[in-house]
Length: 191
Image 1: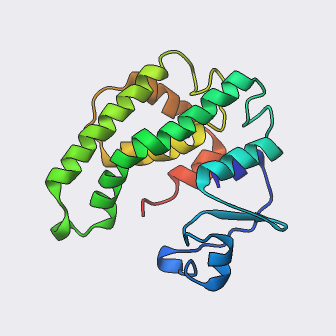
Image 2: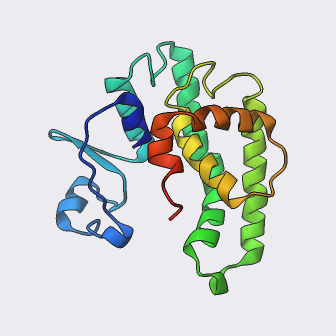
């Protein structure tokens, strides 16, 4: 939704999954065999997996804006999108599920603490990379910043006692000013 907001696209949002249900229906499974969200549909074209959706929207509607025009910058933006999935997400998911989706009496504090340490280590990698540029793929906001921005919003909320990460905080402050981020990310409750 943040990418849609950045691009100013008209859309119809249909909430699926969790308390809304509908993700296990044959109609939804025909679009997304995993039964997960998100899924987009543009005419007869259907696509699922959030980072793939962001890449598609950036290429189709945001070339030179969300999708960097320079091939190397575009590759670096894509690299950070993949890093979010391969390095940050595995650690942080355990924090999120442990603190947000697990009742307090069922939480494994040791596992959550270990995941917090791994999440902080990943955030340090991000902080070091942001020492070189204003944004992840250079000096302009791009599709590469969107997936990490969502998770850093959650990271900051769930790990208030984190070490100093000045480059990450500078980057996050710039992202936090974006109206599409405010509408679709920071104003949405952690669920």
